[in-house]
Amino acid sequence: MTLFSIASRHLVRNAGKFTSCSAAASRRALATSAFPAPRLFDYETVTSNLSVADAIESVEAAFGALAKGEVDVPMPMHIGIHETASAGPGDCHIKGGYVSGTKTFTVKLACVSFYKNLEKNLPAGSGVFIVVDAVTGAPLAVFQENRFMTDLRTGAAGAVSLKYTTRPDDYLTIGFIGCGAIARNMARAAKAVRPNFRGVAYGLAGADEFAADMSGELGLDFQVARCSAELCGMSNVIFTQTPGGNTVLELNDLRPGTTIIASGSDQPTKQEIPVDVLKASKYISDLTKQTSKVGELRSALKEGVMTESDVYAELGELVNGKPGRQGDELIVVDLTGTGAQDAAIGQVAWDKLSAL
Ligand SMILES: NC(=O)c1ccc[n+]([C@@H]2O[C@H](COP(=O)([O-])OP(=O)(O)OC[C@H]3O[C@@H](n4cnc5c(N)ncnc54)[C@H](O)[C@@H]3O)[C@@H](O)[C@H]2O)c1
Image (cartoon, rainbow, N blue to C red; front, side, top):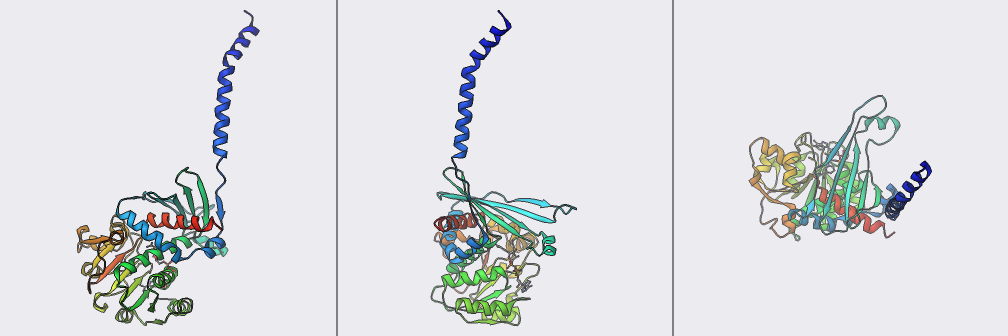
């Protein structure tokens, strides 16, 4: 047998294998290229087409599902960008969630504290939501939202809290302690579920501007309080949304039957509500396993004035039928922000913007 004939027989013997390998490769190529590229929605498109009111119904349903254990919310991931000559400082937070039975799931990437951007006249934060088809697993869209969608889903949680902890017929005077970006979304959210209320604003900065802007936008009366005690004396609902370095109100200043909706604390270093207020309240969490670590509940547990058995309910349990306001009890709702809300606003954004 010549060297040539051995080589020919080897080629003939392997020809079939070669053919089937290349067919598999081309099938793989076909399958992966069959997915269209995700659509990109820029910041302008996102902000001009979505509002807090769009998110409320979906966020409410997501809380209901969360309380039934029907939402997959993995632990958030954090990438620290340490400051070097070529990068940082900054932090990247990755969160996500899937509400069982819905058509999409969401992964959110939020970049914050890139403080050197400010020297270049750029914001310190940015972010995208990636919405994925829950049938095929293929990414459908990237929303450049730069925290806008997070603010909407936070406001929507405020709306759901307000809906279940106040009576529809009560005339509400709603105080806002902290008058930044979240406060504006809480005011819009409040208007969506309780259209007629009087607003009162107090903040270390920005209260006058907030009151004027919200009054103009919502067509409601807004006043500015000189201090937290004055605001508490006027309000039967109080939204707190400060960066959470110091407590912002006192038990003695609260009126009977007040609802406090606290959203400033979302890190283990923060606390807005004194522990005696928490202890005196019917306490409701968005997600107890989270509020016990990064919400107001964390401080009460640490100081030994509450245990997790003192939690009256998670917000989704109220959505699912557990009574909210029953008399003139003090209620505190502790909102730390959940992946269920991110999944809900991702679905809303896809439904609304993909139809444009
Ligand atoms: N729970 C959630 O889901 C969620 C989501 C997003 C942001 N947050 C948190 O909400 C907080 C507010 O965020 P933001 O973007 O509105 O901030 P922001 O900086 O836009 O506004 C903060 C406001 O609080 C005021 N303030 C600060 N300390 C105060 C004090 N001791 N008393 C009264 N007013 C005070 C400031 O003057 C300002 O008006 C932050 O802690 C943020 O991390 C929570």
